[in-house]
Image 1 (cartoon, rainbow, N blue to C red):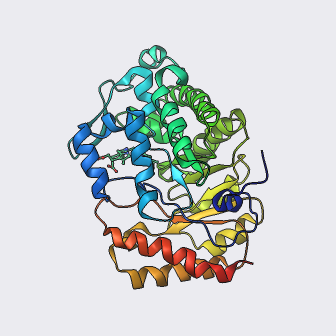
Image 2: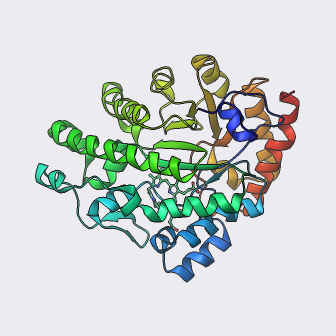
Length: 341
Ligand code: CP3
């Protein structure tokens, strides 16, 4: 991995000194932005946006035009892998993501073809290339994928039931997802992303032994197969109790949700990884003053140390006031200078 970067965010990921704490936000491109809703309306839906490289690039850049964010994240979704496997992703109004074909049997799994990303997911790779060109190396671009378990929870009617009733079936699916994810993340890196993130959003539903055998096992497998040219972030929502175990899977940064005390987290992981997080996204419903106080609280808790990238503990809610996001980004930059240099 290249160890020198001009970008504040990448430097924080690599635990190098910075002038201010960098900030980017999970779901920074999305429905809280009126310009997102307008373009989505025009395109005819989320998938029409995501599958059009020019529009995906435009959406990726929207939040950067409004706020001085330190990172961009490519506009796509973790569910494009099963879509590329032929399961038919669609969004039913107000019901979230769904698949036309669900995974119920070994036969269903046998039919899954590991997608060649340069063919089936080329629209994401094209969006990355276009966005990199537009960013002109001023802001780093983050690529991502979902953890096999998290993606599987959308492909199976009840993934926890399968875990106990037919663990072999579940693992056969997770192995195919992991293999696909390695190819996909390597293709994103070849297309130019500056960091990658693995979203293990539903890892927190697992018992500790299953968290080891599923979340950590496949994350480690993925990270060992992915080119380590760029820093890697691993994030398990509600995974705060497993931080010590996460540091050994080959990632550079751990994402923290809002339930974790960031100072204690730093002491627990030592100097092995950087930390990303962890303001409660629901605090964006308050007001600029409360947000500033919370930012100060998190920055102070982390203290004068390298290796902090500010973020929310999960994605931005869809209906928060846009001014509050501006207040958050400015507060992080302004209030953090005293913790650096
Ligand atoms: O962070 C970003 O700005 C990049 C874009 C991004 C999206 N999805 C776009 C999106 C990222 C990083 C994701 C990841 C994702 N997708 C996760 C993991 C992280 C998390 O938030 O937990 C998960 C579990 C999904 C699956 C998914 N996609 C769900 C559950 C939904 C519907 C719920 C919702 O928030 O609307 C989606 C749709 C989706 N993906 C939208 C966006 C902007 C909303 C679509 C719309 O209505 O316009």
